[in-house]
Image (cartoon, rainbow, N blue to C red):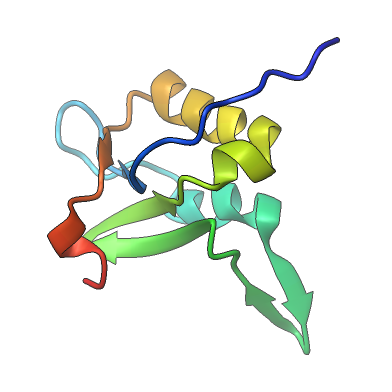
Length: 101
């Protein structure tokens, strides 16, 4: 099987944990589980990768996906995009004025 190559996206993506009808996506730890694909554990603590990390934006649990993920870990990038699509979660580019929010 050939590994699919991705062109690096131009901006950071945010996957929002809300359903099409506006309800919180369940289970409540979905973002941490998804980001666990690139996390490490040290001293009984989890460290999330800068490429794929959970966040809360405007009170909504989200996943931040950095553009480098598509190049450095294309299979994980595909898994994350497929997860958002399958579960009908909104996935939007992060505006440049929102980067440090």
